[in-house]
Image: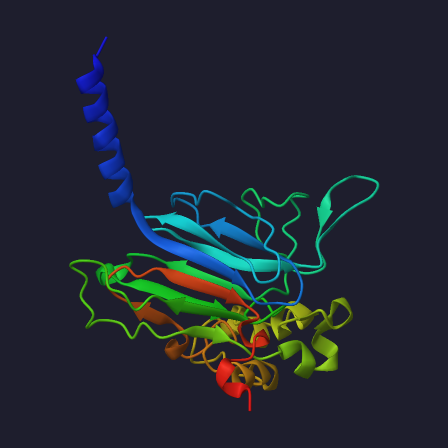
Length: 260
């Protein structure tokens, strides 16, 4: 047997390596009037987060550590309820089809607002965006923490907030409306045409231009990705390994200064 001192040394080493392997903390905040069920999908070949989905009541927040160099997407499911007959969790928007709070490797059924991340990517930068390419179900704001981690350079990357506080469902064109107004489809999802999906002859930025539909999204949410070849300013970068707050319905809580 190893003996106690050896055991303690191994535990200390494990703790040190665990701290180093933890890149960032994601804090999910629900400012919506109703409960949401965040979903998490890790990209292929990347370490998994500790959860793939959970329930988040109004006003609640939950911190989830991300492994280093994590990449994937986060979203919120809305209107979830257990089916009386099967006991499966079924959601009105963003459903991942798992039948439980955990999405277990399944993605969001469109339309859903997606927060996309690549941590510690090219040049050691974090890349992040809020995408409406798969449509919109609720407003999402991504905010990097201002506090730099030790040794982090603050020169590279704007570290700006990404996303959208606007209620796109209220201004959604009738032909894109989904779920009785609970979500707004992208033109690609609704019509499947190459000029909306940036596919076929339109599979490059030169030919796939903004459309009247993507411009509705872009005007309401200038800091979001509105279609596949939206301008590069829709992707944000940050150096120094910040933590991130992902807020659902960020505009739902009026600021103190708004009170007369």
